[in-house]
Image (tube, rainbow, N blue to C red; front, side):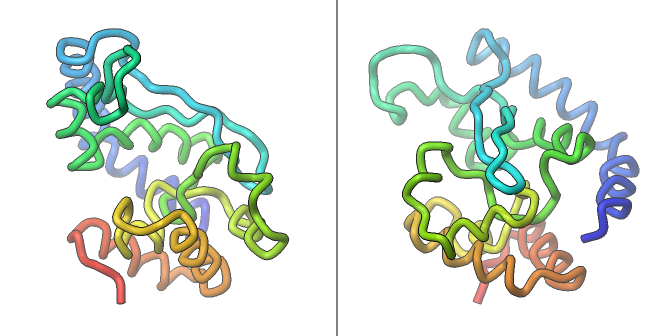
Length: 172
């Protein structure tokens, strides 16, 4: 999707997402404590590191992720509202609306030469792997869907993925 169009979409949607961002920040603070945001370094375009920002969904502690996830955090994850702050990354150019989801930096050394091509485009808030099962698929399957996205990317393909994301449709 052309960058100018992404910016236009994000700016036009500002009256919707900015108030929601503020309300969710307050609720996150009330239910999950401080800090409100979870920050983690992830690989971006060409594998360059950037710090992704999401709403915090877990409390601190030695327990497993499942045990540390709060009820409100589980709601944020189930609705993908924990990802809303990533719209700020779209504005700064670190992310796109559609593209491969940025995985962990630790995986960079595990990619084959071909798999590194998933970083030939900006990471996205949603992507081809997300509409094919999101967390229900393996990391290897995610990477294959990401490579398929990179090979097939186009304005119409991005629009299809955005519509599938908005209406919770599964890929085929």
